[in-house]
Image (cartoon, rainbow over all chains, first blue to last red; front, top):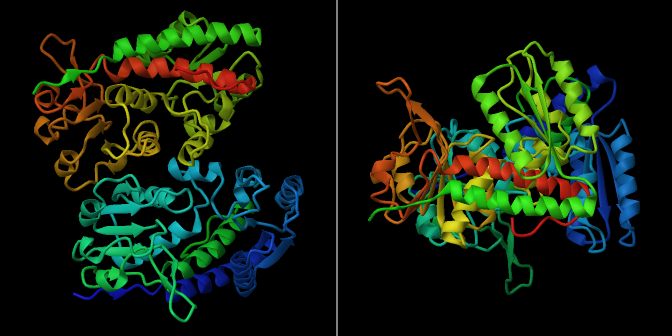
Length: 295
Length: 295
């Protein structure tokens, strides 16, 4: 058996096209485009790349993009003031503060200051709680993208055995909530799990989000399972460029899985597409409109 | 093997004695006792019994008890106004609105109106999210009581395989979060789970919270597992009085488990003890004091 590759790039493009359509419809009704504000503090090169690509995607979708790039000498109170200003700015539907922040700034305090209805990253406790209790929430982009790929591949997830490896607030825990919402039987495994191979071997759905290169071995995968690999790890190579690998040993896993996301080109492109989706959804809810359909 | 009975009644009494001590210490520091307000709408006899026993426990712990018993003709807006008044009342540290509410009142709206720092039931989305993201939260009383019993029985839960049957916002989902916080490997099973017997048979810890009498059979239990039975179901008897049973077939399960909670006398008494605990904790946090120790 050789697994099919789940093409996150194509899926992401499709979502972003639907979002762009939704943006035009929103603008006609609301008289303004949805707006996403990004906040970058400091000069971390990877963060700068991420933020630029988010700004570009925002503009491509026809949304207003407000980029705030601050020096790493920015104080916590200055940053909190900027967030408060963006909370009050009616043109801004989504606020994304790029993490990590410099160590002199308390990330938890910054996240807690973002108005939950504009928290398009879905990191605010209010959104985590709304997701956990089955209310309308803004859901973290990466697990939302994973769910989108799973439903596109499998359709109804009801009754399937799902294992989420990793329990971060950003991926693992909201992923478990989403799978539970789809009526899967969900197991959350992590670094303290004793028999990870056995746990994985029972699952129809495996979502790996641990950040350890190729930790999940191919023969662990139940034949016919669907594998979503959230990990992006850079391994050293002779030419110094490095090689990106996921948390799953891809070349082994393709022999067992029914379908699997490659790294890169799997989950990654979905994350930014879901950020666009969340911004469009936030704009609708803030304008008192029903959520856009077919996203 | 015959399981030991986990004595929730004795454990509950011990917690309430420690709470009473903490109440006296709080009163000395804060100049007032912690206060719990209960709100009962309508005449449901079971609800009335629950609320009275909560009022009694509050008084026994030395806390101020504010009982609001309203007719079932109370409008939603009247109830929301009462909650707003209690939010503003400095003597009140905890607000408990007894559920279910009459059908003309939107429970979600009422829960969302309770100030999260006074939400001693832990039902507000903000508390669910704080629990989910690892922040200080007020945690629903029943799963908190279950965790207390498990830790008293097993000590460190790290790496144990735990199965939670049921995914309600009140028990199942917060229970899973608590077990995850203790580093257990957690599976959430529910009505759509395909192979419940197999899922249960793998678990070192079984928490049953489905509300179906004796659904979990004894031979499903892994020998040596610890079983927490949250269910309270009344079976008809010839004398018309009925008989209380849990979600686990107790007489069978004692042959397999290491320890098991009886019904009644297991989880039930812990719930009210944890309500007292939550009220004392809320009082400390609202007064800017560190959480009381040894609760």
